[in-house]
Length: 326
Image (cartoon, rainbow, N blue to C red; front, side):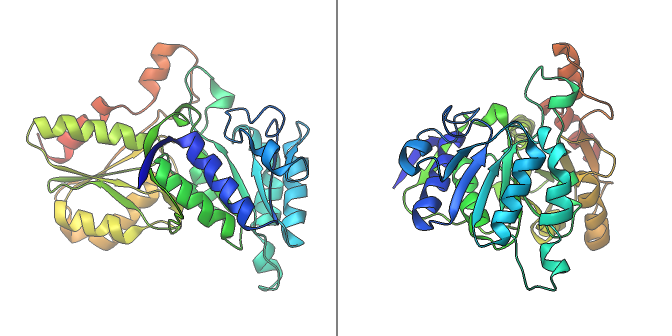
């Protein structure tokens, strides 16, 4: 049996199930308890689990991320919610220099089973310091796993897998997609970290994306189908480890690739994918890989400039026509 849940409730359900399953799991962050979460992802959790397991923190990301890392090294399993990953920049020392390095610095003797989660990317008129996309930043760090998915069922299953992982996992969500709905099966869902999903099968071109840009890719594929172009759409779901095999096998079939990535073009996820495809599928490519990224500048505030800055279906369609030599 499946139900229709939005992303917010699917994530809530994942945390509740894992906290019922394991008393060592707890949630901490700004406004997660009394206010039910800035985006209501933790709604009702304080009532069920109490203030010792759903903990409101001061506005001090470095401080409460550090508390979480210490708790994880001592046998607990914290879920640390950042109101936005933009604020988590203050905690990068704890995430990158402590959590990510625990296993290697201890020669495998200690682990750090912690989840850092919250929204990443643009969310309308939030301007430069509240709209950055952090998947590539985190994925650049050995020792961190990075999840970025907005499908409610997959997001629930991936968050549950992240909570059970013995090492740190960064979960990137989307502020404007918390109300996004989808079918979520009842009962236990565990989605493996590191495996992409084919959202739409096709034969003419492969479109790879993740997080809310997957909806941009799917919308473009719908329009392309009206013009006789069959696009295969791949949702990465996990950025590190990245599922190169699914991408390469799709490119071997379609011979063309467009990568849609909300982050900046330089040193991003799209650049990594492009390198790996030319390495493993060069002989199958009938056209150079084309990337659709946000503009290589800080996000403006004006609505017209926000629209011009971000990837959209029209830009993806133009990129597909380019690789199709149309």
